[in-house]
Every structure is written in structure tokens, then in C-alpha cells.
Length: 363
Picture 1 (tube, rainbow, N blue to C red):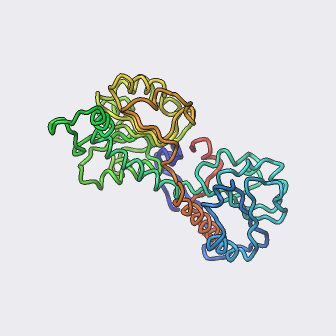
Picture 2 (cartoon, rainbow, N blue to C red):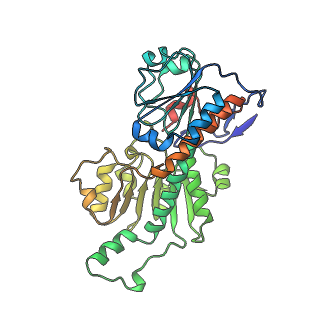
Picture 3 (cartoon, helix red, strand yellow):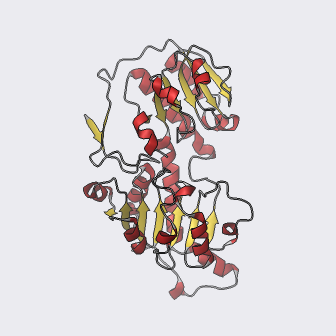
């Protein structure tokens, strides 16, 4: 049995156990599955144009299944009963009983996006349909974005830029460097682990703390993180706190007013996970006081209402959920989906398989 240790697994599994979980493997990995049914793609028109536009990826799907690929822009009413493989993405409606009834032969859903929660219903599991997500393909851009922001935060880029805009050129002794700074990582998700790896590879010599109650101490150390027992300890020690936990009932307002108050003066908060994990109002107050800076790619609510004070503060940068796959990066999701269909056809383990028992711990 192959075992994959998991923590707050991307965006993701919040605790699958300290010793990991077994991954199902086919007994005949090279046996090609018969694909007598059709293949369909359902996602929003804008998403479709980026993720699976006409061309080589769609052609590859047709070759894999030896069937014409049916493509539907944001609607499922015309799905046909012969559909066996369904590729979905942002803009696809939920797979309700009515939608599933149109596809009695459906065997696998490959979601060319991240979270499957808005898509998958109980009916999917009850019918034994296999579900896969391209969350792994989405993790790379988020980690890259986060690492770039950490470097900027470590140098105090926002307060420095604000002072400069107001005619003040900082003295050399006032300038910050990244070397030796302490970074607190909340959640050993796919993205969290990539961020830890990137920090450890940096020449800055970051000290990396990890808070994830479902990762054993030894596993945390092997990842390159220094495990901390409680979130309060991480907040007290970290110059920069970066959030990579999933959105669950357990993590809602995890970084609340009490924990934000523990972050040292001049510290920064980075959130590229989910807005609800951070108490937005409490963070806004801390930033308005000038004590903390914030780099927020997600907020609660999202989108953030126009005129919100966070938009006006010079020590805060709010971006419209751009850390994940965007624009030219969208092809990564399409390529992942095509490869996942190939793996399914060959009887190989699906790299992005999502299981029913995990869903409550997923982003």
C-alpha cells in the first residue's frame, strides 16, 4: 500500500490522520478501460476559452476516448445519456439529481478547477461516480504568488512605498531585509508545503514555523517546518503569518482578534487561502492602527464591498482573488484534466481523486 501523509491538505484535507491514508491502486495498472460512452465538457464560456479552447487539448480528449467531445458553455440541459466522462470547471452548474439523470452511464467527473464542493452532490457519491480535482495544478501559481508577497512583506514594501509617496526617503538604517525573518505558515496544505519548500530554498535563511494540528512533529520537520503546538505560539514568534488552511467550520475565524493581537508590531498577514479564516474586521482595525500590514488575495465577504477602509489603507494590498490559475495559466488545468482522463482510461490511479469521506475537510 502506498501511504501519503496529509495535514491541512489542499487546499485541502484538514486532517486525514497523523499516519496518513492509503491510496487505492488498481490491480491492473496497464489495462485500458473500455470507454463505450461519450465525453462532455461543461464550464463557463470565459473559463472554457482559457482552460480547454479548441485545439490540441480537445483533440487529445477525442483521441483518448475515440469519441467526439461534446462541449457545453455553462449549461447542462443538453447533456446526453451516453456521457461516461464529464469534465467540469468554473461555471458548471451543480450535479443535481436532474442533471445526473440525464447521464445514467456517467462513471467519472474530472473537475478542471479547485474545490468540488459547489459541484458535487450526494447523488454523485451514491451512484459510485469517481471524482477528481485539479487542485494540485492550481497550487503552483498560488505558492509562487505567496512567496513573492512574502519577499515584499519581509522588506516592508507597503509602508516603505507609502512613506516614499509622501516625500520621505528612508534612511539606510530604517530599511528592512529578509534575512533571518520568521515566517509562520498556517496549514500544511498542498500550497502550504510548496511555500515551506520555497522558503527553505531561499538564500534569506528564513526561520519557518508550521501550525497544523494534524501533522506529526516528525512530518513537519521533514517538510522543513518547525512545528508549534498552538496558533498563539506561532503568532507571537512570526514576523509574517501566511494562511494556507482550508475553509471549514473548524477554521472559520481561526486568525481572530486575539491571535492577531499577538503578532509583533510591524508584522504582516498574508491570506491566499479563504477569506473566512481571518477576522476581516479585526485585521482592518490592526492595519488602521499602523501596527500590522496585510496582503489579502481573499476576503470575507468576497468580493469586498466598494469603499471598504481596507482599500484605502497604505499598508494593505487587496487583490481580487488572483493568486490561483489566471489567464495564460488556465491551460495547466486543461492539461491536467486531459492527463487525468488518460490515467482513468489506462486504469491508473487518479492523481486528483476526491473521496466522499474527505469532503468535509476540503476547501
